Image (cartoon, rainbow, N blue to C red; front, side, top):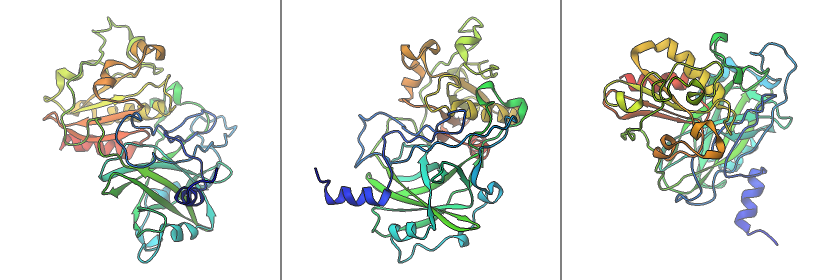
Amino acid sequence: MTAPAGQRRRQSFLRRGRSRCPRLAIAAAALTLAACGGSAGHDASGSTAATTRAAASATAAADPTASPTAAVSDLAAAQHPVSSEFPSASGKTLKQLAALGGSTASLSAADGTFTPGLNRFAFGLTDPWQRFIYAPTAVYIAASPTAPVRGPFLAPADPMGVQPQYRSQQNSAPGGLRAIYSTMLPAPQARTYDVVSLSRTPKGLLSATGEVAVAKHWPIPDVGQRPPAIATDTLASTHANVGLLTTRTPPEQMHSVSFNQVLGKKPILLLFSTPELCHSRICGPVTDVAVQLQHEFGSRITFIHEEVYADNQPTRGLRPQMKAFHLETEPWVYAINRQGVIAARLEGAFGLSELRQAIQAALT
């Protein structure tokens, strides 16, 4: 059967497979970036995000901090992109911008819960040989490949590596994602938008294409709202059974108090993740990021970690705390201020810089 013209156009432009849950397979540790953001039952306009599952080549290095071979390895510059490095969107279509890339990269989204307005868009980049790309990068967005373009929106790379003393066994394999790109994209309507990323490399521009599916509404608590006053698990509630509290090895120290006991009294960082059982395999690295920042911020903010599955058994379904927040994927993190209002929210993969900014938002 011949596909409709619009569908043929989109398939030709993207040149990539699509799935409802964007993921990025990462190195020998088989990590992937979570990006579902919710169930298919919610009201979304158009198809859901079409992104690539790109596997990265592993290295044989013995150093657990070593990264896989990268197609482009300019992480320092990738953290500080400059607008002048990228072409103006004026008078161009998204298709024309994509054609500026001397070769094509693969874009894999790390989040997927978008509503009308300004949205965080996080992603990873690989080349056709499945090697990571770390270079100054910006994103452009349009209603279609031939519609007027907005951009460039700078997408700094956020390093995810933690100091050795904060690294868990779930995050100790050689290789892995060194950083995640993120930017804020305007999406005024509930519909599917096309996006193009351009990365500036010594050999010229690399382009990657993708989509952002914007829903009219998600029930997941967002910035500016008050979260449900859930009771989270503590050493006391589990009778000191640490195995019920966390799947991280070694266990983190984020279970001294229940969420509902400090909500509206102290700033809180609430992390939903399951380092050992994570479908996305990114829970271990982001939990380690939280552990390092817990030592940095100390008692200024209460860190609380909640596992995902009941009794840490996936066959028993999600914990009631996840259901109360309407979460069906992992990881998620919420920064909540002293007044009990959500100051920042991060879905899927994030690095040290973004989590630090989220914490600081809750402290102001």
